[in-house]
Every structure is written in C-alpha cells, then in structure tokens.
Length: 331
Image (cartoon, rainbow, N blue to C red; front, top):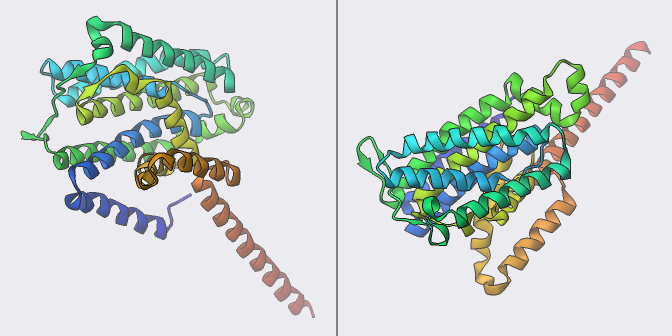
C-alpha cells in the first residue's frame, strides 16, 4: 500500500523537526533524542524478526551489548567508528544466523526461552570475562567519531551523526519491507505452512530475519557506546531485551513506523512523567497495560483499524449508491 499524502507530509514535518529542533535543546535533551535514535535502530531490527517474520526474540539487548563492546574495544584502540560499526554488524549477523537455527525447530514461547538463554549467556560473558570486557568495571573513555575530519565530541554534532545513520537504516528498512523479501516475511508470519506451499523457503527466511535483525542490534550498540562513553554489563541485562520487545509491541508490531513510535514512548514518556517523582514508573506501566488491553496491535494498530473501518464504510456507501442508481434505471 502506498503512503498517503498525509503520511508523506507528516514524515517531512517530523524530519524537519529532527533536523532543526535539537539546535534549541540542552545537552541532556540532545542526549535523550540520541538515545531514541539508538533504541529505534535496535527496535527496527526486532520488528523485522518479530513483526515481519513472526519470531519472538528476547536476545536483541544482548546483540546491542555485543555491538557496544566490539565497537568500544576497536575505537579505544584507534579504529574509526564506521569500521567498528561495520564489524559489530558483521559479528552480530553471524551470531544471529547461528541463533536462527533453533528457530527452525521451535516456535513462539519456546523460541523466546532459547533467545532468553542466549541473552543470559551473553550477560555472564560481559560480566565475567574481564580480560576483554573489563568485567564489572566496564570500559570507559570511549571516543566519539570524526565525520569528514570534523569531531563529534559535542552533543549536537554526535546527534546529527546518529541521525544520519538512522536515515540510512530507515531507507534500507523501507526498501526491504516493500520488497519481495518483505512480502515473504509477512507470509511466513501469517501462515508458515501456506508460505511453504507457495514455494517460500521458510528456513532461509527465518535465518535471514534473525541475521538482519541481530545486525541492526549490533549497529545500535556501536552507537550506544560512544553516546554514553562507558559500557558495563548491567546496561545489557535481560531487561533491555524486554524493553525493546515492549517498544515494538506498543508502537505496532509489523508496522513500518512502529519501532520509531514505540522507542519514542519508551524513551520520552518516563522523562515526561518524572514530575510525579516516585510514581512515574507506575503511571508508565499503567499506560502500557491499558494500551495493550485496548489494542493488542499497538498504537498504530488503532490507527490502522480506524482507516480500515473508514474505507469499509466508504465502499459500502458507494455500493449502496450504485445499487440504488441501478434500481432507478430499471424502473
């Protein structure tokens, strides 16, 4: 389905706001927006795995951790961030491909347990293998990159660097989900048996979904490391994977803009509710539970249902008018 004129205009307005708005924000405001970008990239990867291929994964936070540690180690030793980012993506791509093999034998909550075990294993490696990860002390003094020989040490410059990466990933993401591969992912999610009967190699597409989603988690981690300039094991515990899963579900699993909206809510809403002091997490949890009761398909699911119902009413009215005109001509 082609984007409507309203969606195009809204996208342009949002893009303009992302370009101009941060100029007037404080360093902390730019940090929050940069964190939204990082989480959006990771959520895009999980949306490919969950929303399009229908595979439940609780390992996306672990892939972010792998990407963060690989990027941190390389940049600390003098490698440029783009090279470290590409390496992080390739490492996570291979790990995601390997993790995808259990998905060929187990499904749904069984697969969630398999990926949860991988996330727990990754956390133990981050914490205990001090010779490479620094253990509980973590890795500090992670440098920020140069772009066209310009330093991005400032919050605004690094925000634009992250925004550029998000723009490239968003374009690739759009092309993928609108391609035959994206339609094959949807067929796999809706009915794997029917997809197989249509000649779709379900094994290959499951592996590809895990691999690409994991690689995007690695890219997000490689941006997270220079953003906070310090990585430690608790940042990549299992609750990060659960938080990313929540972003995809709340925004709208299987919708293109779902990860962006879900990450926006997960990152910004707790900040907006901080005026309630100790109650903001309770209010945030209540909002999420209420939303999922009203619309299990997320916020964009509500909009999609409204648009579908409106089109149905318009089509019904058109059919009724046509039938009435036909009856009049018969008389």
